[in-house]
Length: 571
Image (cartoon, rainbow, N blue to C red):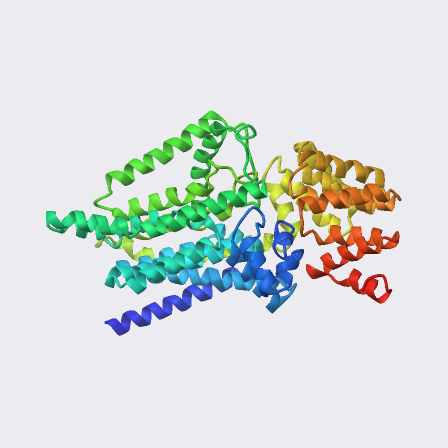
């Protein structure tokens, strides 16, 4: 029997790997996206320098896109060392990490429930759902798949720890959890997930109830006490995340986004995510905030959530997997549900990556209970499950196609959403890269019309005007971008480009002043050092020029210094 089960497990593992590779196969032909991929990979000199002492130091001290996630940055460095600018390699590594998470989830569920087919179905639902595409197909979301990989590995290790209580296994769980947090702080809710799993399927709370009264206190203390180190890691990660969000300027103020608005959006998002799990269509790369949600929609969403919660609590003893799955879903969404708003999106498909496991468990164990054992209709469960897996695979394959490049991705987003100034901006930037400047300006104008205080659209439109030779318009746009975000590191690029434009107009002191400000805001800004070095060297200030050229060289770009040395300007 054991050998037979082992053979089934191996076959299921092979099946999960095969269908996952097939469903996500299109990502091998996808390019990088101009939505954070430039900040993480294609324009990041530290990433492109590979793994070395300086880059490792940077990875553990840097904030990239308002995140502190050193392991994610190190993984990008390793990818660049292996694949360079070939996006396929980066995407395939993300797919491998996703498949690893799927297998750990399957093995964990099977080990703890001894229920093979529901475990396989839950893993397949998680693996192949179209909502996974954003996390897997988007290179910038390496943090998602890497964090999930360590998180699922932690759960699997936890099952072995509960089995034998060996200290080495406990420390392995802690290490895996810490690695997950250093990949993405989304895992901060994992200690609560472990408590849920202690209830079901591990049934440690039931064992505690069955103990003699004198032992119950000790057992309860042990179950809760062993979570304390996990909670300490969670607190440390939370502090680091708050610091990174604050440094990156991504946290919205209550003045900009009142708490009532956030709460209303959170209620609707909880229900909307649930709806997209069951009806995974019209998935966009960016969902703009809706500041005028109708009251009826909020009430319906709230009632649905309350009713499900009441049903789950009613059946908590009879059907404990419903309780665990539902509160897994609710709890793991808390960090990204928008009560502390990070970014400008109302919701995001990637945020369902960890929470959706709870719903998959509810479905995998709940659907078979709808049929009695002698019910002839129960025979359709297996073919129905295969059909569901096949359908999800096709939808995922289709969704991967929208991530082919920035133009397909944001054109698709504009078809599905209204008032999407982010999509207009990034579609325009894709046209800008292809030198379709008139198309780019049309979409930048639309982004600004929708959101007149969106600094990035002004900055990008300034670049388009500069390329067209419209220097005065470029100056106006760069200045407006700076006016809207004067002290943000993001405005450093606007100061730099303002300096470039002034230099072209022969206003060299104004150019230097703007380069100075760019460097003040972003001390490692190579382009600003290079541009300032050129002005100094071209106007006889060799000491200052060589200083800036050396600074640029320290960050990996030595072209100006080499030219200056060969011309006897620097020594």
